[in-house]
Length: 465
Image (cartoon, rainbow, N blue to C red; front, side):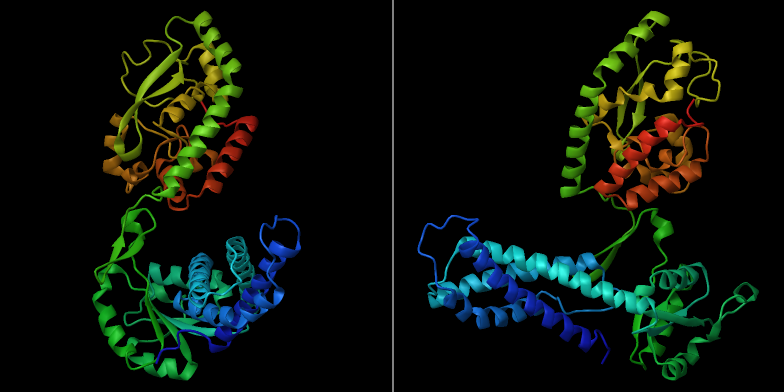
């Protein structure tokens, strides 16, 4: 039988979960009927009713929390997974309590009290578990409650697995060394403990609890043999998939009628995420347009007075899913700037610029009309910078994963731009930063990038020209 969880930890979490649930049950009564914060329209129930229902609530809590997986504890479990389990468990507990009260016709029945109980329980469980895990992770990072692991393989994936285990010391998994059937001079810096045939003996000798199979895709046929050898032992076995470089984005795993399916390229902007990001774009771009209306009007007048031609410059760019749109900018070059050269990248001290245009481009003020594109939905405030179709066709052939950046909307600013990768800088580095942004997107990351953009504008950017 594989050891999937620590019995001591399960008992610890169950104990505090039930304590928190009991406290929330009494707390809901006090807030509803004793605090005076909420008006009472009916006769106040006696506190003895609340106390009498407590044993049933505790039993139902233990059942609900177990059903929703709150005690499926293992070292690789992420905290957000635990929060989801807490929410599910609290919701199920509330339904069970209400159903039981209705069935036995319990006179202690208050919808506001039940709502308070649900909220207090959910918040209490999350805080309690957060504190417990913080203490456990602190002890594990100091060497307590350690388990040992071996890594099968010595290539890039195996080395990354070892680094990840060292970095995530809070998991309490210490790597003892590597297992390799084909050692060579490139593996001389690694502690190779033996071959796959030695695994059963090494696991027994060092009391190993985890084995990570971290082989490159060219050697995946060996994984079956390794797993057959490990079937003689009682260790936890995990396959570290060597696929992120195929996708460019962090991959996802789903289940298709019993078949594990790995998603190699999926946008993080779906469902509620789309609503959140679009709401931020509308609200912030509208506020920016209101605040910057007068400066933008002054810039427009100056453009008209200093050079012939339109105020705005429209250029075809690509955004989400490769769809094209006309990106707006304040015109900073002569009207006939591309008549002879065609589509070319801007360069330092570009002779095609107007005197005012040089200032606008240096200060990035020529980008302000793109707020209108954001409001229309063509772009986002934050995202990979949009590129012209003619350049995209070139880059897609020469730069790996270039097209992955089009799985989200293009942005006025982005993770690459705030790190100085704009203008005539490394395209490959720019793509790396763009893909990092797509993979790790959160609303808070967007706000951070917007703040860094403001700081960059104040300090000035040497690559703005």
